[in-house]
Image 1 (cartoon, rainbow, N blue to C red):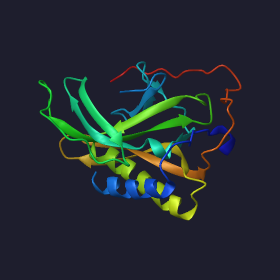
Image 2 (cartoon, rainbow, N blue to C red):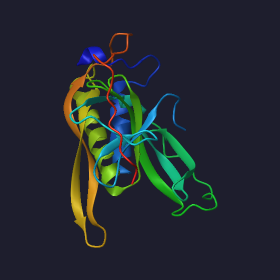
Image 3 (tube, rainbow, N blue to C red):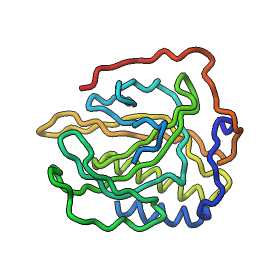
Length: 210
């Protein structure tokens, strides 16, 4: 698995700094070019991109431990009006007045970047962010796992996960699905320069957005 993961480590903070910052940020709890948005829809399916392509079941994803972010987002009617995110190794950004039209004002948001390392989407980079309680909890748990791993083995701090789900019953809205990042292993930051390529042409699973 480690031969599929390649994150540049030059100029990044020390692993001990990362571990400390992730612990602090977990307690408090613009998209790069070529990166898709990964999310869980209301029906409990993991999807990405404007076409809401369904993620291949059982595929593995490597998360860049230095990409953990926290900050704030202001949502309008289905549109992000403003976003202020910084690395978790930095304090939460200061806030000014929320943009006009923001439905809930500024909301706390956390997230990270990840890359698919198996299956038909291997090599694809994505971004996951969350403002919901369940989503923030999932990111918090993963951040703490990385912090613990950094203390145990600082040479292997890249979590490789599968995308799972959980749910709870809301008395008004019924079944609510929540994201789960099921940890498979930790691997090194190092890897080959060549990107992995699927063995055959991907067969995209298209779904209509809810």
